[in-house]
Image 1: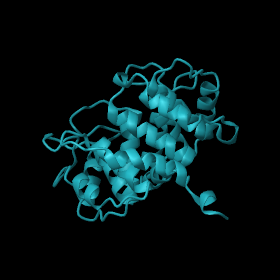
Image 2: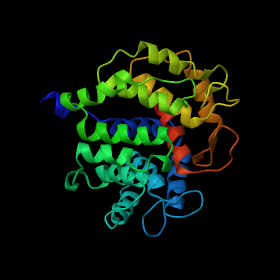
Image 3: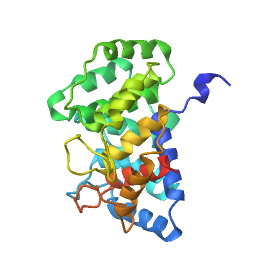
Image 4: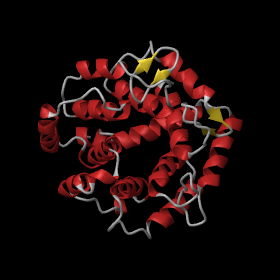
Length: 278
């Protein structure tokens, strides 16, 4: 079997880590997670955002979670929903979310966009989406479609060589940047040290270094990026694990920064923390 056939894209690795996280839960907690997911899925198969309306971005987290859970019923409803969604004219976040969902639920039947199309998506209407999210979704999509392709990696590596980081980058953006440089073959020792600088002892990873509280999003993506690039997590693991455990609430995870809302996105991040540290 060739190296390319063995390659496992990062979105698939996300699902593997989530499955590990779920396996660490007691049976009662596992059932609570599945019940919470079902409560977030609307009659049309989409997953709802905090406002209770169908949302492709939240449906992406639902797709990853139901794949990790092995719930064919939930995934079947989602597949029916996305089969009727036309991505033309959708927001950038919706285009990337729909692509990543279809990679899971439609697999071989899915018609993949070209590399040029992905670049157009990430550059289109840049003000409508936070740069960190845009780069994160682009990297996941690029990796899923072109992961081991050396030529495409070279194309991506060139602008990364000239990209100058600033001190005001959020943790999630820097984590995505570290992964991007790592998969293109760059030495990431310096980037690893900077990302570890977002960690606060006794708390976890923070959005910004001056932020008062750690949160599950920053902690999850930082841990994932650090683990995949080969960093030693032993010093940060206990506090990050404690952060996740303290924010588990009846089948869902809270954000960790004081927000008491329960949603699929932070449930994904909480389980990702558990999986990465398992």
